[in-house]
Image (cartoon, rainbow, N blue to C red):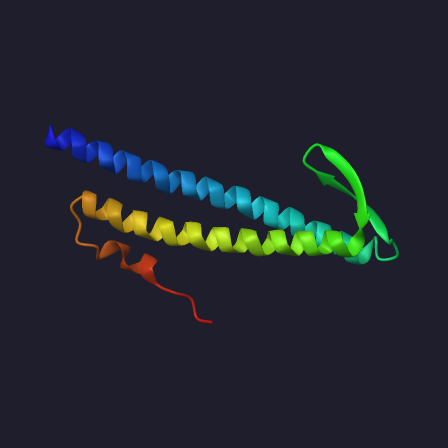
Length: 116
């Protein structure tokens, strides 16, 4: 029974890690789309006062400055979400290694922090 419980926990943690990886990919795609939209606003639509924006299932014509603020706010939110998910993934990798009987030495490389 103990073996089944341990395998079940390992499977759940591994599934969380894979789900988080997919979520990061999705958020990164949105971030790239936002970056493209900001670039288009600055270059091709620089003379426009109002631009069309797709919000959910509607198109709305809004002032360009408001659209830029919305996109930049979304970029900030996405960056924060991606950072949070990466921190969670680091913890899950350590947890998975411990469930597999390791001492945490293999996952130490995941604990590194970037220089700022």
